[in-house]
Image (cartoon, rainbow, N blue to C red):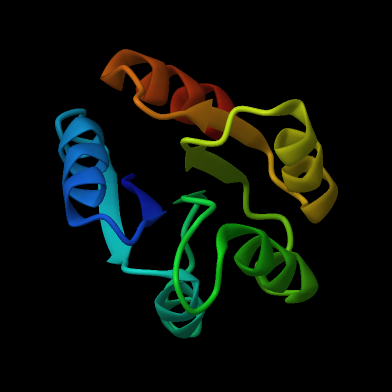
Length: 122
């Protein structure tokens, strides 16, 4: 069974790279969102198995998105991976406090992303 992964990033090239990396495995269906607001709208109709989101985005940023996902009973247990240029421990702690499951720093290696996704999805 294919697993649905939502990628949320205001950078089209990052969404493309993440999507390409995951689609190559042949077991993931990708839903893209251009920012947190777009993601929240799509979460009304799509139930991803995992969300991979950037931190710094217009409209609704990654932390706001995580809090909104965690506040919704239908999505509160969905794993969320932060994929961001932010690498400071204080930001990681904010992400964890908001409810992030994991953290990957850009630029990332495709193998690293796949390993984290496989580990989180079990």
